[in-house]
Length: 495
Image 1 (cartoon, rainbow, N blue to C red):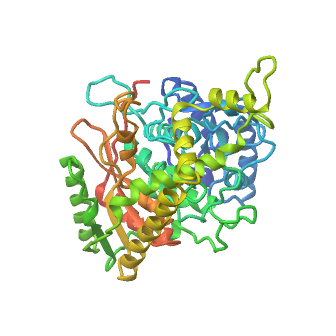
Image 2 (cartoon, rainbow, N blue to C red):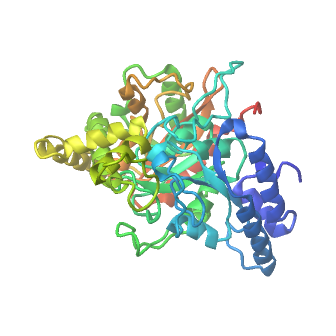
Image 3 (cartoon, rainbow, N blue to C red):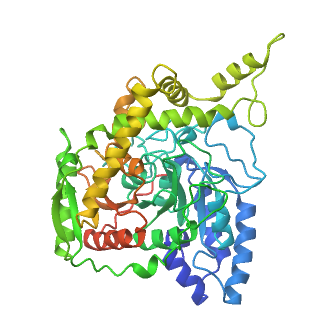
């Protein structure tokens, strides 16, 4: 078998079990693809020695006949996950040289299941961004191009490296994290599948924190079945994370029947935005028709507080970020600025943080500190928290009325060119999260499924939002949508 790196998780797993291929062969195929793809800047810390060592161990385990689903499958790990002895920088200068002495729970669970880590993936600094342009490693680049245009495009953010690597077949799947859409938006931009599970389904321990009440890890894969396989390994209760749910993890793959007869799918009227491109509008309508043809009932619903979601998110997330990022002070780990004669501890903090944090992170820390300050705490932060409760209640009311899932666009546009959304107007960039942030504010599971191409040949995704803790049911609806959409497009290789 050639081009082993082009396989998905399920295909590769089945080939490994049948003895048609070894984990070492799979891993070598991916390592070769990674070395040929430096133009994408997706992998920022390559770990070929660790990969081959784990692949050999996985082959032994498979021979023994007791291997779990993920055993022997080569994946990438987002740079936000701490990996023991391997640089874990969250794409920030302030964590230069930081090699943790511990492993994040999610990456440990994947390793325990026999998954092979190929290396660490590019991302926006501290996961703050929608285009992977705030990384200390430089921009991650999408493998997709617009028609005959050579302009480099964004793979989305913050999990841009993960999206680019999976779409370009550098790895079979990758981990991502999602605070306001950072799994689903890049998945939509690059024509892959990404699921953000219910808040508390995957442990946050060992994942560098951005906004602790919103962050959630999830898989980024080539299709829905692969997402089900990988998600099952990533989930589970973790006593080290106080927000981790003590719930049994079902066999998500076994729940993929594709049968959604009688399911109620809600279409929220508030997601019809002014100026929404006609292509997105059509894709959304087509998606609803596909689900209807598969036997689902389509109902119009209202989520009245949707219009307040972005402002509330951009108060809560920076507030939590400013608090979480206070620990980066140059004292215990990471970068420390060069100090002048006579500089004291205050100067050390100031210089280290000024040098170590990029502009976007500085902007959010300042916003967060402002909304948490004595005079503004009630006016901004507490008000945003109350709005969040209302947004959560909107969803609860809809689900209580019998709706099983909600269908929306994943993004307001297809991928855009790197540098096209300038730093001059950060709000323009923040609007990219308009369809995704509500899901984080309400703690719900959401999945992005590739559903079509725009007129320039770029992928467009649809988002399904599910009931809390019902990822299996959500993935099954996504599976029905994926089967109906029949999306098989791949980027032409130019790198």
